[in-house]
Length: 100
Image (cartoon, rainbow, N blue to C red; front, side, top):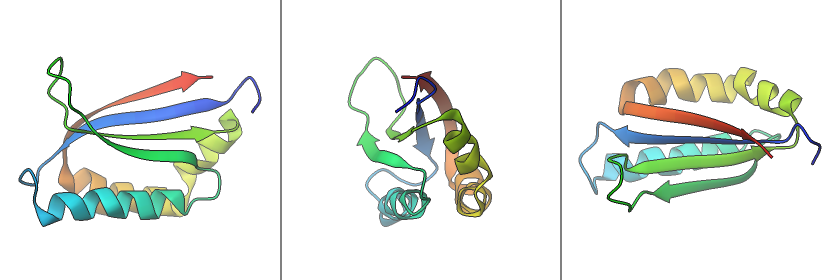
């Protein structure tokens, strides 16, 4: 990875009831859709367990360069997931991007 490599992470809460099929489906569909974008590396789905904040889930992924990160943001599958799933099903979120 070059010096412009990025770890993109987002923590979020869903509108779905805890433990519901809709919750599981969103997490799995996110994994399936976003990992199919070629520039996405080391994708992970997390369930948050710390009492220090009230977010429930996290997605994390790496990009080899800032250009790859920009390509991901503009990729049709990412845009479609945001439009058709994220905006509708996510209650709130916090996005954090780190340079490696």
